[in-house]
Image (cartoon, rainbow, N blue to C red; front, side, top):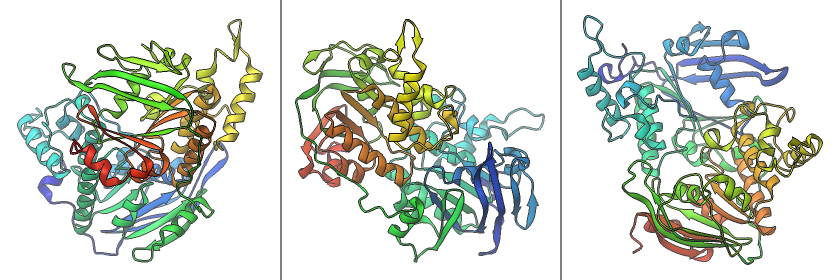
Length: 521
């Protein structure tokens, strides 16, 4: 078994030597080209940034490299350390020294942390029995490597999303890779965890490990990479060396146009109160005897964008999910919609009251993966679209097409599988579902997580449009510049309570962080 903790990483390769060459890669889906003669090179000990809009071809190219798409499904050649490779599966790619960390976390929730790290390469005693003592000791060292202070005997189900992401990174590192591919690795991480990860990557670079870093957080990419490659529409359109990277030019290369205003902000007329919450208490998801949110209350007006800030684990997602009826509450919470006391004990009650929720994890709870795009968009509007138990198909198609066009969802047809879309277009499908419903209040939980800069600007514009039409919006975001630029008023959640509340003119990252760490009171 190859183990990073004992071998001190792989044998160093001469700096500048091309450890990876992907030559003339072409791939189609149903006759539609998604990679058009792409050539990508990676040197030993290099961190290469790979950026582009959702749907540019980044993930497809990396899935070819990782063996997720077998060698018979594309044209072109892959060479690792000068040796031609044909990957029929992920196992073949791993044997060649390539490890990929996906944005969508894939762990076995009911196994322990240690079992997940060494799954497939458990340390054994002479007669084939698992060496449990050695397993837990090595797992503890792997966790320390990524800055995770966990009991390696804990079940993964009990971990937060950010802890699971760091665990996925530890799992990849113990396999002693030559090439590490990271797809949006910090999308669920805190700032301190992100700093730990970037420092770890710099250490790997010094030991000859090459990395391909994919992220829509361009400030991170600019800070960590030695070289940057920009993809658009299945082609590589630009390459930049560190020191010659122009952020504005990179964004222009990505989207194919010049973005004049990253955070467009319209002036919506603040109207009557549309939502009031009183005495909302939510039990902690992992410790039911504790509360993650306690006696919280706030109001929201028509046309207002209310920013909900706080650190990971502060209870932001739990707060909006409890209002929406998706998780239970405790005590006697009161929810008023347009001044009327409204009982919400399940999501259907919330939908009928005019509330909508774009969840943090779109794959888990934002859409139904087995349904087509059209059915996902119309899902919350079936009552309006039905008569005598039958869906009015012509009206459904017309309404779905209207919102698919409005949000510029990139697809071949409305009958496409939602799983075949890029992350940004999947997010637009979820938004279209609620736009079609004509909601009064829309909760947006990390609406731009894992999507490209062009799609982000479109979503910011959409938020402006909704606010100008009188929709009240509650937005959660861990990206403080985004939150400050988009919202009109702010609530900062910490220690189960609202620690601070202020308007746009009083907002700053320093004030938000002070309140989020519990120092405001």
